Picture 1: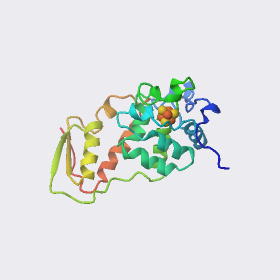
Picture 2: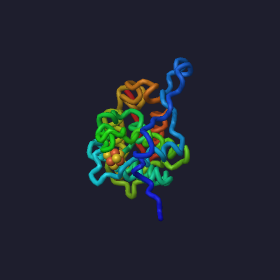
Picture 3: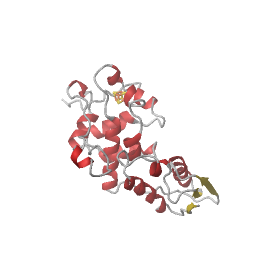
Picture 4: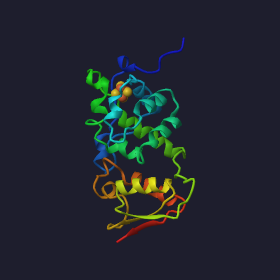
Length: 220
Ligand code: SF4
C-alpha cells in the first residue's frame, strides 16, 4: 500500500534551520539562519495537511501555490517545486528570507491555528530556490515574441524589477531608471545583510542582464 507523504505534523514538530553560532555571527554581517538540509526540508514540507481551502495561499499577497510546492518538496521533486513556486513570484529566494510569514502564510496556516505549529513555509521556499540557483534551474524568461514597444520604469526596487520581468516576458522592451547608483531599492539599501545578504540581491539583478533585448538600467 502506498504510504501517505503528507500530514506528518502528527509525527514531526515544527523546526527551523539552525541559527549560526553567536561567536561566528558577531564577526560578520551575514544571515542568521543556515540552510535546511534536503532531508529537513522534505520532513518539514511533509507536515502540511494539504488543506482543501489553503489559508496559507489565500493570505499570501501573491497567492503562491504553497500546498503544491510543499507536496513536491516532500516527495523529492525539487525542480518541479521550484518551477511551481516561481510561477507567481519573481523573487522566491528573497521572499523566503524577508516576507513577514508570521502575519501571512505561516500565521494563517491551518495547523498553526490548531496548535501544532505552522509549516515553515518561508524556510522551505528559500531552500528550494537557493537549490534552483545552485543547479542552474533559474533561467531568464524568454519572450515568445518581441513587440515594437518600450516602457520606461521609474525605480529599480522590487516593484520595478518585478514589473520589468513581467513586461519583458510579454515581449515589451524595458528601461529601468533609478536615482541611486545600483538597482534593488529597499532590497539593496534598506534591508540589513543579516536578513538578506547583498549577493543574493545582486544575483537576481544580474539575471536581468541575461534577458534577451534587455535595454538596461539607467542610474542618476
Ligand atoms: S494552510 Fe498550512 S497545512 Fe494547510 S495547505 Fe497551507 S501550509 Fe499546508
